[in-house]
Image (cartoon, rainbow, N blue to C red; front, top):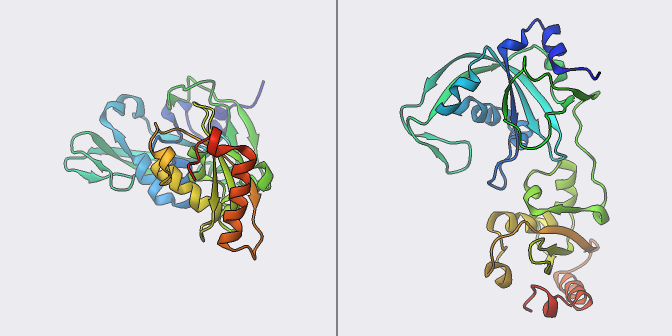
Amino acid sequence: MPLGFNLLLRTAGLDPGDVRLLRHRERAKPGHTPYEWWRDDLPLFQRYQARQSIANRPHLDAAHWAAFVVTTEAETLFAGLYRIGGREEITADAPGTDRDAVDPAGTCDAYAATLTDDLADLIGRVIIDWGPGLRAWIQRADRQDKPILEIRRSFQEPGFPGYQHVILPLSRVTALPRTWGAALRASRGVYLLTCPRTREQYVGAATGEGGFLGRWLDYAATGHGGNVALRSREASDYQVSILEVAGDAATTEDILGMEARWKAKLQSRDMGLNRN
């Protein structure tokens, strides 16, 4: 039998019946994931977690919350144990966690959630098996003893695999590991978008200072990145990959020439989404 998370709770002197497990996963809005907030801005993550819908009161009524976040590798990572000191209903519109978002009065509770020292040495190190499918994101620890898949030496994100191995949906580019983001911002060249729904492809060039990542973030934010053919169709979670990386001395004209060659090779003007 695999080691269960409840053993860790009991080792810390906690009754699993007094603990709720909260699994924060990717949100629908690109660029804002709980994992990214936890990794890069802990106070923002804690504000996000502490603001909960009134409808969740019965499920969140416990002395402690064990927080988990879903990583870029779809792992469920332990993010800390929080002591709950009560809640207060929000009686006036309040800024939400998402940019420009507002939580209307009377819809949310603000919980007094304090990160404790219990299991602090395991934060960012314990990976659990939450279970198959989209199971409830709030669960009782005493009823769900989650198997521990791995206890790592330290929190560490996966290293950049190399440009040839970058193949991912656009929905993931907003929360890539730091090593990936740094490499993709530092390089320019030619990339490929493929639509899983229509089987069409688009060849594009990253020529700006933001490199590949800067260009892909445009697509993630707008759904089309300003391209005529993509703008005229229903939004899709395109798969993105890199066709060719330009050298450090390459000019914008050099990269546009590379792009034109790939358009010709893949016939993306005739059988794809390119219009020039």
